[in-house]
Image 1 (cartoon, chains in turn red, cyan):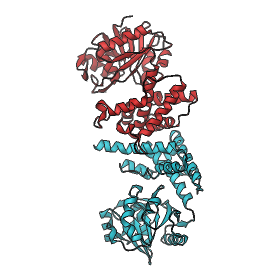
Image 2: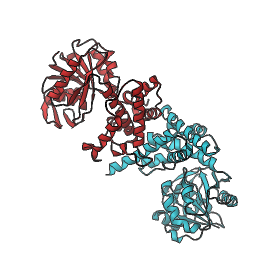
Image 3: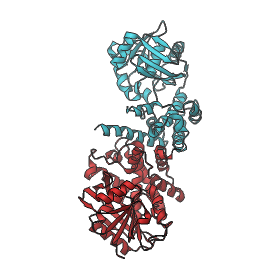
Image 4: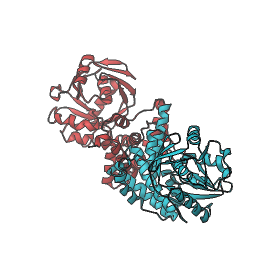
Length: 316
Length: 307
């Protein structure tokens, strides 16, 4: 196949970063939820600042029926909104390949329940900050790892083509034959860091890796990561990177080394804004997987439940 | 007879105001708040709410102003125990000092500075509403007993209990007051920490299935540590928790009040205390430890915002 038309579904931070970059090389359409968002993108284009600086023309719509045909669909909604976004695509775009880029695990299975498109799994470490609907700041230009989803039908060659498109448009990407080890590394990292942030209101800072005093938070983060690793082992996944090392590196190198930077993990951002968190797809998915495999994860379960208690969207 | 109340916040004020009503007892109050001390000396100490009391203890911010005292009642927050008792220790060179603070570990600190120590647990609660004025919210009993490593005599314990009871604060003398202390400790560790982390009031948190699961584990671990120490519980904290839901449905435990006001919490003396005794007795306390880390993390988030 040849990727010449891309559709980005969901234009939050990650979706916007994909769209603005890829639009330099191919035609990009964007599916969003809000009319104003679509109108704003159609009249102003999409601007990126920070690690990249340019503006791209894109075509946006809120109506799935209006989407032009595409070769690659990038599903970049929050995990919590994926179901609503994908349902209208059921039975359409039979020649497209879809790539999921959500946090956590389970997005590919959800895609597979709506169609038999070839699927590409991915896990991204880039981050962005939205400044309104048509301006995205490219914050961390870390790589996106992608590869064919097994047992889907996307080939490694297709994944390589998508990887080249990413790199050619100014993003960082690495193509892997099996993304699960990377996905699980990020899942465990996200589970530990996001759940602790969502409960303590503390951004991801050096304290997350500190184990000097007996009451230092690093001990809990390590405990959560150890439970995650035990679950990965039971699932037969050999991790791509040690999530503890990822945690240490995130708070000791680059921009995150100073507390001024104080990265606010997405789940804490959601709690602060009163939005539904991705807890089910991150800590929830991990705890359920551990239950299925018979791995005891008491600390992870406690964090999962405390975030749910803090997530006001569960109130009714 | 001379009594000194060390730390005159809400709980200290309850003890000071009640005992200062007694004719043959001279009550001294030591507190670091100059405003509160000046108000007490000028207008007396006033309790409103459960009991209306107006009495006149002598207050000071200067530890050297304290005369030699027969009994001490330490009611500071746990993180100020050491600095407070260190400052006033001379006044108790021949006195017995009783802690009525939250959590565990305070008596151990007090024993480093004075010869005879009394272990205490108190249920009455209130809040300072203005300098010299305290709202008395909840009545309840106080349990006291000799602190074994450096004990006051049982006679002294009984004398203090009789005096407090006569002043209007029902106090029960016990040979072993650990059961009462650990009952309240474990109950508080579950309620205070989890209400603080979820920002839910007591009864709402305890009746939320998600939160209760964590509370139940905090309680189970606490009971295991108490059992390893040979402490016989006064009452099962799990039962106490269940019974407290309707009466304290929207009550904000003191730690949640501290968290909302962004003041340092007593987590070290509560869940941290359970962990410390767990380490000593070889009992694993992962859930108390997690609550301890998380509240410490929460406190750290305020410093970050100030920076």
